[in-house]
Image (cartoon, rainbow over the protein chains, first blue to last red):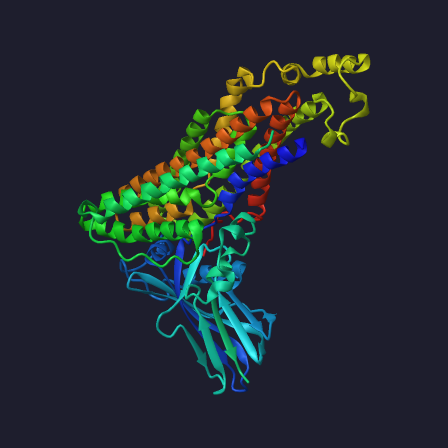
Length: 213
Length: 361
């Protein structure tokens, strides 16, 4: 009885502290992404090409301290060191790009062909992620999201996902995180209290599937 | 005695607090809908997740996203600064209800350390003020004075973050060390209770035993006033903390280390806003926004801290009727809370608790 009460009290303190703590991050960075799945002539997927446009607050932040000849104008060369920093930093986060071929996790190599563009107060990072080994699955699933939800990924309204050189029979499906179909992982207060927020951002994942018969 | 009334009371307080936040939000919306705060507000984004938590999340995102546009607007229209301050204040309130920001650490510290609600409020405001100051100093030195890159700044932020988590862990370890002693002594001093029979030592049989009494005296000599205190409660004379524990030597100093451990870590949001404001030539507006944001944060953290302290007072009153057991429960709660501070520190340090880690891109 005594122990139970003690435990109850500890629980109360825990819920107060942890429960509130579990109501995790809200995004600080917003990315509007456009992604391309690249296919080889034999119909296998070789990689993903991303174009990520940052929100204006983060774009301004990222440009802090970057030397430029003309104020407010940044050439691709002037931005090259920043692009280098970006792709190097992204490695720690697995490029926020998660691929599965027939349910098996696929790995990516280091990005290639990366560069930054500055237009309309916004930075766009272009980069290509080659798969470690090209795959030719019946179903390819690709998710783009930040598990910690520091970054909010939204796929572009126009042409969010394109298949480049895919066999004609392949069918692409794209699911946005908040279109109501993502109910399976819809969040209740319950999930929050469980304290497991390690994959919190998965609720905000953009899901792409490509079925090739 | 059952704990049910305690939970009911705590629940009532929580609901009341939530209601206050709701009302506040309503007021802010009313204010913002009127002209002194600029034009019509853009349509709210559809909440992506359900429930109160989802609603909180969507609200703070909304406020945060409005900041950049408002700073831009403030360049040509001075009145937009007021909108900026209103948004920052609201953002601070909502944001602190979410992750990190030391609310968990501060609450646990208060519970562990017999602190008063008033001290809780002071600690919350002081640490929020320090958080704002650190953000301004980082951006002031790195971006404004040195024109360093975002990479350098973010690196500094990350280093400070790790230092903060390390300090919280060290602070928690110290609390566990002190509170663990009190708990162990309370365990030994309390009369055997069925549930505790396994933990109780055999030579602790019962009061009035010559041998046991001797043991008591001996420990008394060894441990000084702490043991006296536990003894007092054991005898049912006093259940409150002795004054020396409230503001005794080192009391405020320990409070200061709590402020420092929590407050040294700036909010990434504030840093982004400050750098953005600096780039727009509106650094002063960014600084004002940061401090107002801190004020909002302090209000939420203080509210939660007061709830935690009240919950503990309630527990103390509930357990006061019991002889011996009361002291044991209270020491146990303090020990547990001290353990939580340590867990937070370690969890944050090693990334088990992903409290909005600095993400450098």
